[in-house]
Length: 458
Image (cartoon, rainbow, N blue to C red; front, side):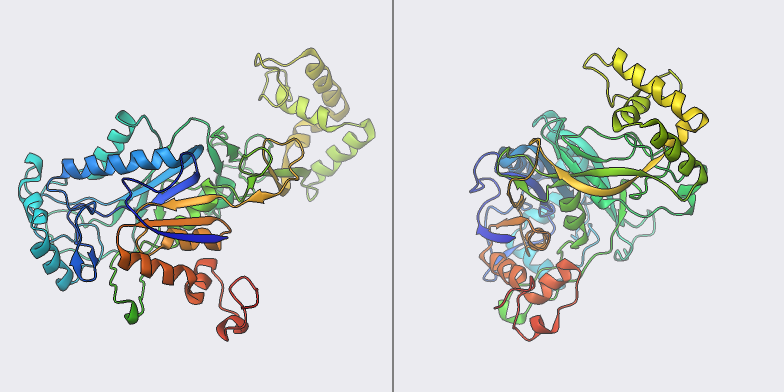
């Protein structure tokens, strides 16, 4: 658990190739504001390009650097807002922008207003479509795999003074991967089912149908039409997360209007980065279902268990029956050979199980998880681990690095601004901010300065 605050350029990251497990970032928006160092606008900052096309060019260059430093098993999550052409005010992302900041942006970089006027030929009042342009360029130019578009729905978004269109209350997050096979641990971020989810479903667990914990994207079957996963509901593609204010100490002398909520990096880090990297095989440890058990609350399950015990059925019988199926129609690939077909031995074991279980064979397959373990490429994953590395190349206030630190990872926050590096350094070491990131109240000993947030003596 550690943090590195680096003053640097996202176009030339001071990091080695293939050294980052996950990128989670929210780049500056196009033409929104002038970022400052010591009260002065500094050149080279992304977002100050004269046209949307040049902004996307710069963003693609920055993403190319993200790809360079990301491991093949890693993911890149990017948050982007959009802007309307021909609209003078920069407040198109739902974030608050003060009058002083607006005047500074216009006087120090008049390209903002020029972009609003001409917009690369885009007609006035039209969205530039920057998120879509960027995502398509990532696919076409960088060869990235766009695994998902996640909509950030803002329940506390600001009002807009428009009368002829809907109020914009969302932004996009894009999930990119370098390879079809990548690290994911989505069972870590499953949510609770609601009443609508439970209609027409069963509450039992069938192994092989529920685990979203995969190394390199062997995705599990869709939850649709399957028994409810006892670990919870797979996250959807619309996340309703309120914006989160940030109060910065006056002595830092830095204003920031758009720190994104801690909940975003929290879910992303938990769901798409390993809890630790095995020092032997170099692979991220991923959570897997440690074992399964019958739901003994059901009399049918107790009967199935008794029959299986009397017949001496083993896990090999269970795996065979799961693969072949209660009938001979076939179900999955749990024990199949590399040809995608079951061997004669598998069919024989499945037949033995069906004969022993009779009409309770299907009940025997309805099991639920009884715990988690962590696996990697090692047959016996007992070696030590090192923390996964989480990068935000547009670090700003250090939100991503702060949450990564709280979740036991190593967070790296890169920013061109010395002011924001100073702000991020404060935030990632402040006890109150750490408590908020860890979702705990500060213990009295911490508040008195006797212990740090992890219970160590100061």
